[in-house]
Length: 147
Image (cartoon, rainbow, N blue to C red; front, top):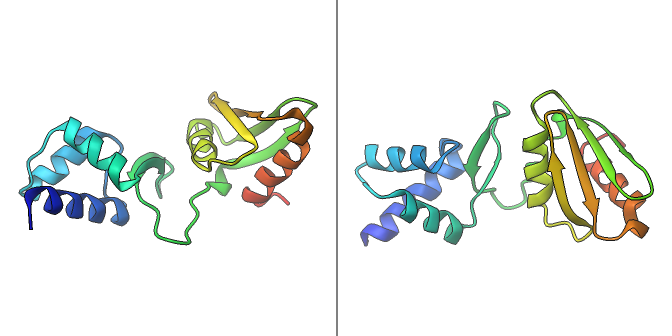
């Protein structure tokens, strides 16, 4: 097996096991410890090719990972409430968790989400169309198991 294939296989195993780390530097170090020295730029390319993303780990922090088929990673336990007005959806989270929730919402690639802005405990979700803001708020509330 080529070095590239070995590295990607090991990287995939690290990501699926949840031991990937929260930075590309940590991934480089983990690969080096396993006899596969590489660079951050190579890991960055590999992550993109593997479809990896930063998401919420078991401890609530951000980690690089791949999702096994059929598994969702939305951090429902971090969401406190979902409200909306005529133009925006506001998602309130536990303190310090809004960035992780915002990343997961962006990662959903939901057709009704144009983008998100996350503070410390609040995520503002910008809908693609204000005509569907209510449906979007309901969809997020269902993901968060609030409905």
